Image 1 (cartoon, helix red, strand yellow):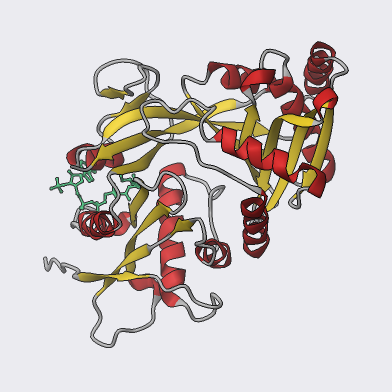
Image 2: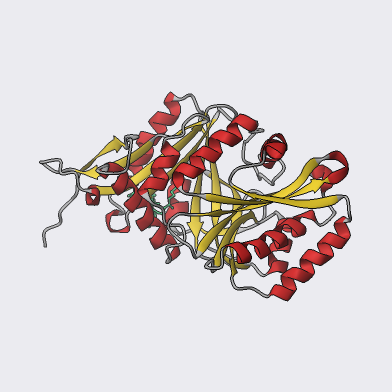
Length: 371
Ligand SMILES: CC(C)(COP(=O)(O)OP(=O)(O)OC[C@H]1O[C@@H](n2cnc3c(N)ncnc32)[C@H](O)[C@@H]1OP(=O)(O)O)[C@@H](O)C(=O)NCCC(=O)NCCS
């Protein structure tokens, strides 16, 4: 038997004008989709080159180097199939400038040859060069294992990973600590309308007349843009962070508008449902779905937050139940909503479970402090 060892080099994916003819971008996208399909067994998280490029073209608040391992070829053929694996780094430019978020993935057919190690070394050089000292990364799992041998517990004490999976092995071998475990949950549509209506009515009765629902798609009405920016800022610190070394990430109206433009360029649609505190004309809570360009069956549940001053009034249930009803009415083709929550976020998980979200896997959130 002849064993053919592939050799490769690491290249950066250029930020092109369009995805047409951008073979490194296409290979980067295909590699991400291969890794996601292998991890999850479905295409719900699949991405497109246009959507990825739309994100790469907006680097005002986050620098976004994207690297690929390209199989050597004597003619350097512009063939996306030559991409063996990918790495992405997000370097926040405004707040949390001590941190870098990293993701490394290798196509299943090319694993255990050192591709990820090479990509990780290249990423580490970028991270050190940018003066970052805290690195975070994520690993996916299809099901959370029951307590017992062969599992890893988060430093929060809540949630477990399968210790023997490739991702955790890779992260542990590089000195990362498991700071948090997230639960992934899926909500199926069509849903039990009476159940969701009952939860909404109970939440409305509990919250009382001081709160009123307001909603929009993509473009935040001028009236609410500063308030919505404040909710986004609070989202960065008011959610459980485990041992993750993150500080406040400040949003203002300008950043909201820049991000709206980015989402439009990527073909994403954000369906926001917020609760106004009428006496103060401020926003007390919000939740949103993110619809993606390549699926009309799947949407992401994006951020949900009730700010601390307004907790205990069932506003979380109110905005979530109302947004599910609105999703069913406005996007009748949607069959699944996917959501991520920290395992220690018991209040949010309780709301999701009551509404009918079912556990469908999760992730480990890892952190490494560079000396
Ligand atoms: C994790 C992943 C990136 C590894 O890619 P790879 O190219 O196979 O990794 P390498 O060949 O460079 O292996 C590096 C080290 O990772 C660990 N490792 C990787 N896969 C492993 C496996 N299946 N079992 C045990 N250890 C493994 C080992 O420590 C290995 O070193 P060794 O080969 O000297 O034992 C790949 O399996 C993948 O894409 N998984 C899904 C995405 C993911 O989890 N990414 C997060 C990584 S932080």
